[in-house]
Length: 243
Length: 115
Image 1: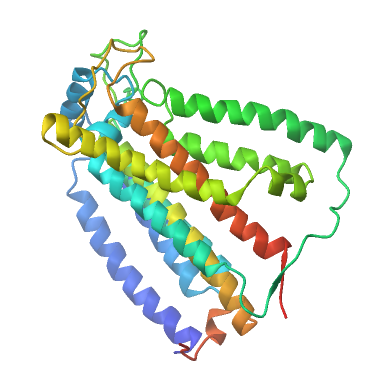
Image 2: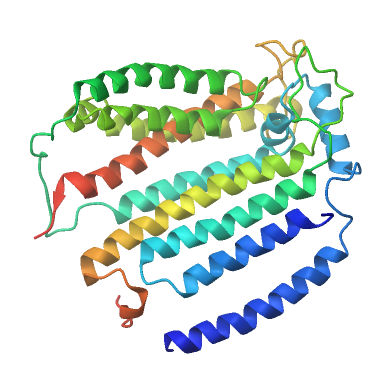
């Protein structure tokens, strides 16, 4: 199909879709109204389990099994990307040539911000049930924060601080811990991922039952998975050369 | 104004599709797909929005009867973001392989099936 024909086909399809979309939207109850029935039930359930961050309560308590699926998608995609990005038979994985020059100020800023970012990531995971944040967000912050070492100009330093084998184990352990907490809920309360731990008092660090534990499990998995993913892309760019 | 956010969501979806259709570079096509996905974020958040309501995070300072926006769609948006990121990673990994094997990233030059 030529580019012109493809574009015409798209225009025809897109204009039909746009007309249907406008018709559909005009039948909706409008934007910003006060009627949110799911909200009312979700907020009541979250407060019942002492979870201050209702989004975390939805993700890890009310819809926990969906999050298990989401986590499995992440695991599968990291495995898939790692398989796609492994060096081909004709390619060689060699040590990178000495790094380029980086300003001393950049290097200093990189190390300072590294510490702050790692702390922020741990804080996001640990307080995921109280304040905005959680395992997914904190995990990504931790993993990308580690790569500030690379921005600060040292691929060898990054490679040393990032033993990929242990991150692979960590990713599996995170996913297994999530499933294990689900099985524990089934053993104690008879339903998968049931929130069986005491809820504690609303707004405390130790509250919300199993939500903080699930946050930590997800945080470990996401951090390890993202590190592996970025490592594979960096290898492609830096240490792997074609035939 | 009543439906503004919904139309923004539809527009983002369509403009992203246009980007994919007219793409001359696989990385550009992946970025255009991300634009499509951001349309779904806007749609979900618009469905849960309420004027003068706050974020659904209660603390010791925010009484629990304060009106908040819908947390269910926010949790779905989080799922959406995570799945979107994993799809992007997989597609970019494929683009890397295609660039190596075919020596091109223009989708129009990839015509033969291999396997």
